[in-house]
Image (cartoon, rainbow, N blue to C red; front, side, top):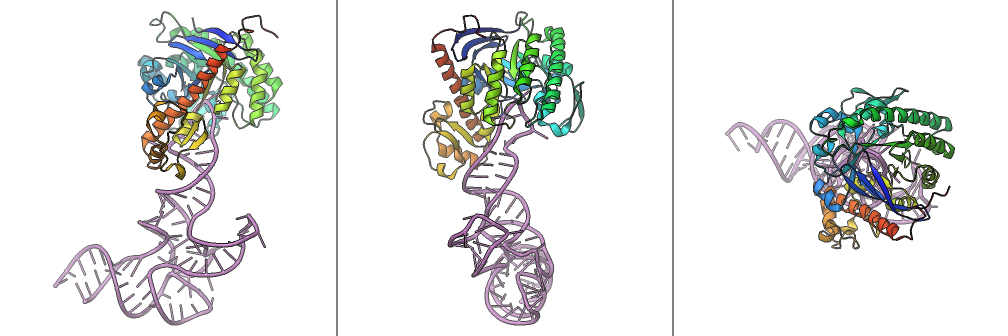
Length: 377
RNA sequence: GCACAGGUGGCCGAGCGGUUAAUGGCAGCAGACUGUAAAUCUGCCGCUCCUUGCGAGCUACGGAGGUUCGAAUCCUCCCCUGUGCA
């Protein structure tokens, strides 16, 4: 059995509060998932993540395949054990790297030939290979191998990308179904297995998005993601694509928007009915000195904070805001101290997780369930 | 005292007769960051003024003179620093 998804409250505007039950733990949704590409959410310890209440984090197929290698991780008992993270995890398929490493890739129907960004060596990634790697890693949720369409993309380019993504989705699913039982922790966790999500592409063309969604839904994945967003398009388009695709996805399965967003975006999407989101923004921005706060953006490097003894965010009760001043965080940043990245990251993640916590509370308090009555179409 | 080597914008350090207000790096100031090739990247960084422009003026390469149409760059003297020899 892969995942279980129980909707516990819903609003007329589409938002829903649910419990996502995964082999390594239960996730309260809507959820924001910190990104831990290389087996670490950069700059913070697993202890800190647990204390912040993170229930699920990401890992990346491409990066972990290159280093330390998926077979090595399998031999060490899988990704959870290797990185000492007992809770749920999701691995991205490497599809995004096809997009972001575009200078080092060559795409064909078979898959993608990559040049390693580490040593220049050549590697072929196919849907089957991505599944093999993700099964070896053993995250609770694996993602289909897709091709993230760039922006802007012509209609024909988006169509071609969609064609690849849907073909690869079918191959991913077939291969995954044939091998999902091989995950290292299966017996240990009472025979439970990984789940696989499909990824909707289609560029910024609503009809292509619709077509892609319908074809993926017919394949019956365990959950669905909307990919190819936040790749440089205007925000109105992001919203339009989400609004278009969301209603087409099965109501009783998790819906995941990949790679978003700013604080107000994740709140907005969650209220629309997006169950899962991930984004490097809070962690990357933190390491670069940008704090997200209830008072807006705080660039902690700014001189005006040099002697500011107030907490980073007066309205925040995270461990960083309870203990440290803006002046100290600025000093750490100026001095290039590693602790700077750590503290900034803890705060930003606390801020993001706090947003989702409040959204969940308000969804749970919402007048009940249109959702529990038959879907309006 | 003698002999070498040097003294360049906050610091380090290029330049060695003319597109040089002066390459770089650091420091400083500001901005960006959306399924992480990101503890990264971008801009500004002598002073003043404005119609903010590949704008105008001023001051700058230890000091003072000099050569030259033109000097951070060549010459003379002086001051200072480092190394070696006495």
